[in-house]
Image (cartoon, rainbow, N blue to C red):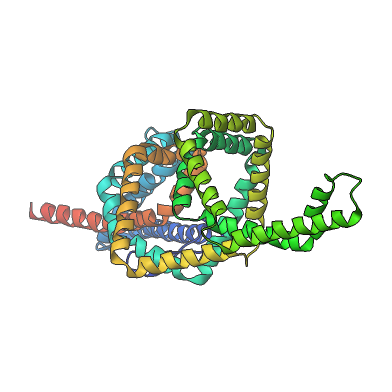
Length: 434
């Protein structure tokens, strides 16, 4: 508890109450000590006066009896209260200074009391069920300012985790996952099954159209490329116009062939490509030789250092992207997280079924923690009290309850006066009757 500021606590009824500071408690304790001591001194003064004058003024005997009883009660209760915290008058009287000498036992008893009475399933579950924590949490999360704060704190924590993660360790994990889930299964059958579905759906025709379109554009832009390949194979003794004729003819034939294949959806070349792809996908699934060749290619790729390089590049790219997105308050990632937090909060407020599920989950989780770790939780109290200095412990407890204990002294003074007066009156009456 702070000694400079008042702590504001909210009770079960929702009212906010100020808890006194240690300085305020100490001041109140001193005031009550002065009041109790003043009553003892006053009783002693009345006793001294009445004792001296009771022979001359008979009725002062009753005052003397009351004052005598008041002193006895005040001294007895002063001794009792003082014995809790220290030795009265500094004398090592047995069974005094109870709190400092039995500090550890008190701490153990307090821990056991908290464990038995407060950390039971019935208490924890009952309290959580009555609080409606999911709706309170939803109301808090639905506030955009709280969502911003939560997102910012989560982003800082996530960036810290990214910094702590060892690059080599993460790369090892990525490489192992790639080897296990990408390279371990046979590629041939999987590629064949996917390819068969694509061929059956005619998806390869779009790719063929793209290839033919690009080929036609290239031939139109490079008319000498095809012709040059033909004329280079003609005899050197032929005239030059023959070379040019052959080159032009070859270019036109090739370009015309490409155009005809592109325009004719049922062209024999297209059908041949479809048959080839269908046979290839079938071989990839069922032909051992084809499957073996694909596995050999996979093995060569697996042994390549590029796999490790890929893992490193993938992690570096992911890490950099995440770090930049988490650092930027306006990034899509932060904005999405913020929106998700607000949406979750709103759903918890309006969705009774979801709120009930969250309450049940939180209640079960709390009950599990309490059921399995309540001894350790209560042990914190015992261990904390054991670490306290005896004098510090005494001061802490006296600050909390010392003011109320001073009322015992005050009440003892009053009750002692009444008891002394009553005893003296009864005794005097009996003596007179006898």
